[in-house]
Image (cartoon, rainbow, N blue to C red; front, side, top):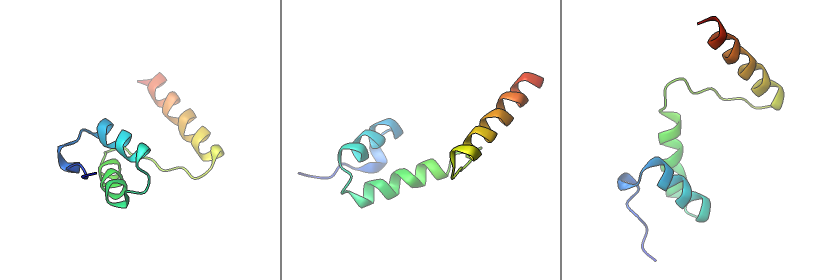
Length: 64
């Protein structure tokens, strides 16, 4: 099977490709590059950090 040209795939298409082809490290790394380049990206490592970030963003939206 030939590998798709990752540059031509949309983010959603690439995500699906990676989901069904977890062995394709190049595709996964390309997807990570796209995700990491998004502005406003927040990384949380625990459920508690995620909950705190979510509460913070909800509070910011309520004050705007």
